Image (cartoon, rainbow, N blue to C red; front, side):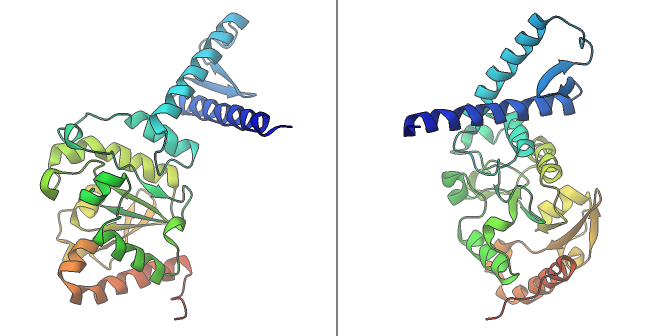
Length: 264
């Protein structure tokens, strides 16, 4: 088989997988059921083959739209995450949308046992479309590696997906617009542990206004997932002595996940 034929086969397999992912999303939303790879509406399970063909054509068209929306996007490595990203779309749900360069969805292992949640993109993240790639991101990567993981083995996301102007704090309406998508990402990844980085991540997920200095280092529960609050890497860059306390928090996470510090 020629290379061109191989490429065509791979493309067809990709489209088929995306269509299947979309049909699963429809099923989860209560629109219909999945039987033998076909979309069957719960209210029209006995409809004619013409209706079935129409539904299949619609699903294929939607899958093509999904591919267009997520082309080049990071953090969409599973059907569940792809569905979340597709629902988010070219988001204009709050006032941050018009000012962004790139929407910053997430990055990493779609089935990671460990997930980190930060506040929002900065200038570097806005340009690259990936969370935690600036100076704070470089520190986070070092923290992850110190725990015995590689960056690509964990999943990383933020509360808000677009950069607040001037790196200001995200405002309540902006958090409210993005929060459902963060929660959907966590549900899609299904990590064993979430590390909430800084007060906005902690307060958004736990609905607890207690200062991060009093919450860090104490296990909390987020919808059945163990959550560890700790300091944001940007705060640690401004306050280097606090790195020791953050490391204490991360060691608790390592113990929970059966990890030991790597030999250096």
